[in-house]
Image (cartoon, rainbow, N blue to C red; front, side, top):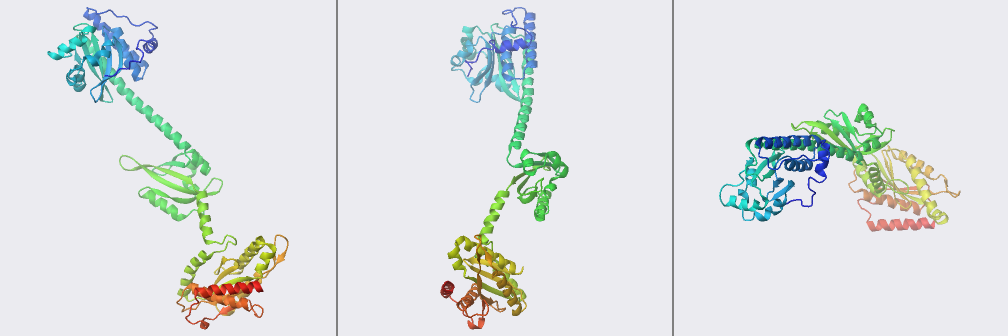
Length: 539
């Protein structure tokens, strides 16, 4: 049994404040000790009943009610000791409130040693949930033991009444009287009414507490949603908006009133992928779940990438009652990923495709050319007079020249053609779909004229570069790989650079019959590039 020995008595402070709220001032109700008149005793218990009712009208706090219950029992009736306790699962007794001569409770645990706990009156009432009056023990050793325990305190009768809360046994109201028959029949009826009334009040307070907790939870949830970094939208089953949080308004620029009037489709625009919108509609018409990204528009017209998660809320019947949409602005993440993908496939200096992008382009171009029996020229380009510019004006000037040449090459080509920079001053062209060799020559001349234009450096100097090019035509019945064709073009480029003082045009054509069915080895290709670089440095 546990008692809160450090708690102040109910008469000190707590009860006097309650009693003052009942309009009784500072005085406590008086009672006659051990009235012999049965009618007077009943009046006292009826006054006890009334006072308990007044307390319940002025408080909804459990501990105040229990302390008041014990204090009123002692002050209004002949009861010497009032006690509210609970039987714990380990058969110990926990004190919830007490009043009167509590010395007996302090010694109760020690004095009842040796007595079977499950046969005592408190445990019997707890198990059977039936009130017990005046006969705490049956005849025999237990009755004798109880008399010995209570003799120092002159306790001759007791009343034990069960109290319920939330439709479950919750506590026991235990009253002790010094009279042998302290609880006559009419007083028992009053006490049972008091216990029943207290139980009903506790039942009501449980409901009030639940509603209060629910309101607090709703308030907490609303506060959490408003403070959430992600945008939150709540719609009904027909997708009508009923709630948006502050993050949604900051993210989109729309208030609840505005977006409710326009609808969520107002966030979509010309660049929103219609396939994603179809996926959302299909998800909402099916299981209701969606998780993906789409391009949305803010109120000011700016776009942002939205990671959208839609979660259905189900009724007990299994029907969907609401949808919760959680959206997060992932524009920075999306742009960073796009930038990484761009840099992986593009030359940082010129913005042209790099070697990886050329490989991807070839994987698309060659099957198309083979399928339609179209023409294709693979061209390797190297810049003449580039190294002297780099040495004389510095690397920044050399980088500027490469950027200008890259732009001119891209502008001189048709939309069906492709240009990539492999590194240094080396470029590769894929010229596709020319009708004859004369048409290809016109394209090559156009490229030469564009690149040979003067280049103005930031320092004010004017420089110029020339082209050397090797061209390999893609044969319709060719069964080799692209790397071999690229090495053929590289071999033709070597010839063009080696003969640039005597050549009549800046490019050389690789003739497939010169090297029938023989692929140039990787080593010889590297040697060819080395020799070409030496030739460039010498002139």
